[in-house]
Length: 467
Image (cartoon, rainbow, N blue to C red):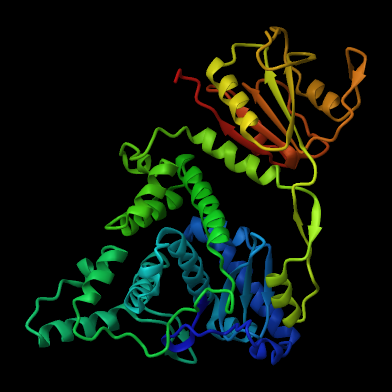
C-alpha cells in the first residue's frame, strides 16, 4: 500500500515500465538521516504505547529503505515472503514526527485490512476502498490522539473521514434519506462501507486511492500478506494476554471493527482465540495460547532450507532503487535439527508431552532428538519411559547439545536449529552459545527467568490442566 498526498493513494511504484523508479535521485544525506530518526522514533512510540500491531508489523519489515522513488511511503510484501518499507525522506521530514506516526499507522492498518478482507470482489469495489480509507484514518485520529489529519505544508494530507461524512449527509438528505450519526457511521469498517453504498454518488475519486497490488505494480502477494499479518496479530494477542493493556485495547477495537458482516475476519479471530480478550467463547475451536505461540515460534526457527535464491520481484525493485541485491534462503534442502528436552526432576504434564510429540511428527523434514534431564541428560525415544527426579541442571543440557559432554560414550555431533525445553524453570539460569535458538516452555507456577534474562529468550507458560 502507498500513502498518498492530499487525499490520494497513487501508484508510485510501477514495476511494469519502472520509469518512476529509474528517475529516482538520492536524497540529501542530512535529510535521509533526519527521516530515519523520525521513523525510528515513531516505531519506538508504537512499541511502547500507541500501536502494538504497527510495532510488530514493522519489526517484520527487515528492510526499511529511504528513497525518492516513492512520493510518500509504501509497504511492499514481496514474493519471497518478506516485507519492505519504502519511505520518501523529504516527505517524512516535511510531515514531522506526528505525521510520520500517522502514515506508518495507516500503512500497517492497510496490510491488516488486506488480510482480514481478502474477498477480491470487495477489494475491487472503489467504494470499499474509500470506506477503508475513512475507517483507517478515523481510527488513526482516535488512537494517536490527533485532532485531524497530518499537515503537509500547512494542508491536511489524506482522506478526511469527517469531510466524507459531510458529503454523505448532504447526499442522503438531498434524496430524502436519513443519515446516521458520525459515531454510528464509523462504528465498523463494514458499516462505513454500507452507509457509503446508500449514497446516490459516493465521493470516489476518478483515480483509485490504493495501488492495485498485482504483479505489475507494488508487490503484495496474498500469501505473504496472510503470513505476516497472521504472525503480527498472534504476537499482539499474546502481548495482550500477558498484560499489555495497549495491545488489548487496540485488538478489541480492531475485532469489533472487522467482524461485522465479514465471515473471513470472524473466522480468523476465532482461530486465534481472540474472543477470550472480551470474555467470549472461541467461535471455531478451543485454543491453547502457548500451543499457538510455539507453532508460530517454531515456524520462524525452522525455516525451509538453506539454499540461496535471488527473489526476482524484490530484486528488481531494489535494483531500481540503487540498493544492493539481497539473497533469500529457500528450500528445503536439508533436514532441520530440533532438540526437545523434558525436565523430569518433577511432574511433567503427560498431555503436553503427547502434544509436543504429535506436533514434531507433523513438521516436514525435521530430525528430532528427544532428551529427558534432571541433573544429567538422558536421551530417549517417544513412547519410552523417562526417568528422573533429582536436581535440575539446564547447563547439563546446554553442555550436551553444544557438544561439550558425552552421554553413553557419545557426543551430540549435529548443530540444532532449535532447542525446546519443557521445565518448571526452577534451576540456575544459563546463557546458551546461541540463545536465539532456545525456546522455553514453563509449567504453571514455574519461573519465567528466560524472558528477563540477558539476552532474553523465547519463553511462554504452558497450561497443565488435562485436555
